[in-house]
Length: 320
Image: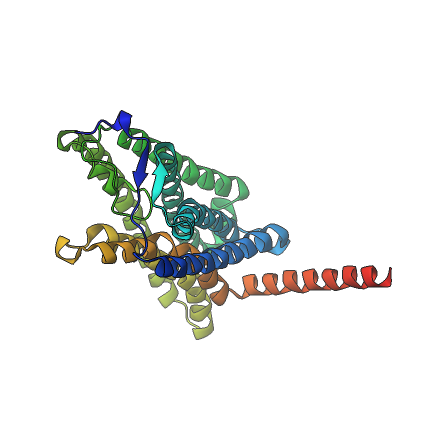
């Protein structure tokens, strides 16, 4: 029996058994995190600086990019540190912080994706009421509700999980701190409290998922009634990036949490956890930028202006 008050640190699952493979994983994580920082940073900069992108769709996209950056910065730096320095420890408080911020940003991302489905629904099914239903104040309220609900969800789960007594050591079977792994260490008769909270959260997630499905059923019905092929293509092109990001987020998360026990193994669990916690935040900005001509034009204009400014500064420095 191990009392949780005596635990000062947890042991995380190493990404590899040998130093060479750990160094390789460090390089891979570094590349993925840099790609995520670059892609999401460019989207945030383009939306913030481009006045013609100050629309509800791009406002929610900016918030989504912020949540993606938060997800990457919560799990990857510690994993890179452990791989580089060949260690696997994380402090008790650091683990609690990691659980809180991971749930916070993941919950915010799912809430924002749900709000973005409503934005697409109003844009295509009720275009004449778009400015009324999605004015600046309404968008700010929806974004604030998404972040506030994510904060409350993360706070409840973190406080509840780390109030459980731990009876089975401090070794976590994951490369970052997550609730299912911590529950495996807790005393069996105390797990029901956290499991009940998980059921409530799962019910809310299912409700958001059904709302998104209903929105897209209405969207597809409206799009199919558009007489011109060009109009249908334009309507579908605004929805495809959101659908791709939503599918990537839900499919990896569901496979990680709902896969049958017969498929469970340490290497597979580690691979799946990387897929749902690291890959989507890195791919999301590229999915959106590939299909959105307005965003690509804004990024191209911003990069061109930056290079022209850089060349002007270089010329002035050389002339001095």
